[in-house]
Image (cartoon, rainbow, N blue to C red; front, side, top):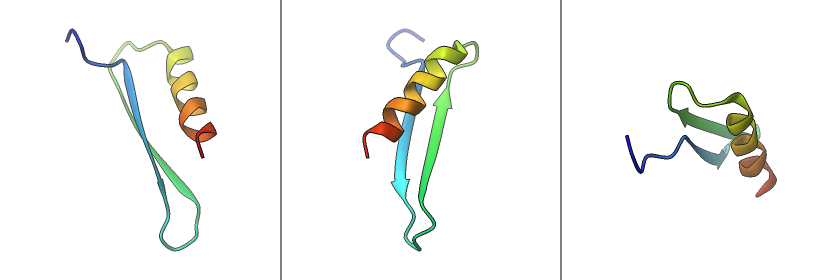
Length: 46
């Protein structure tokens, strides 16, 4: 799985004003600190 990112996120605003939705895909065995880092990075972008 060379070249595949450890985690990838997508952030989307809700159309009905309920807030944002974060969808994440991570490889099995991805360290939790990396998952948290990716979530913080995605949420901080908006």
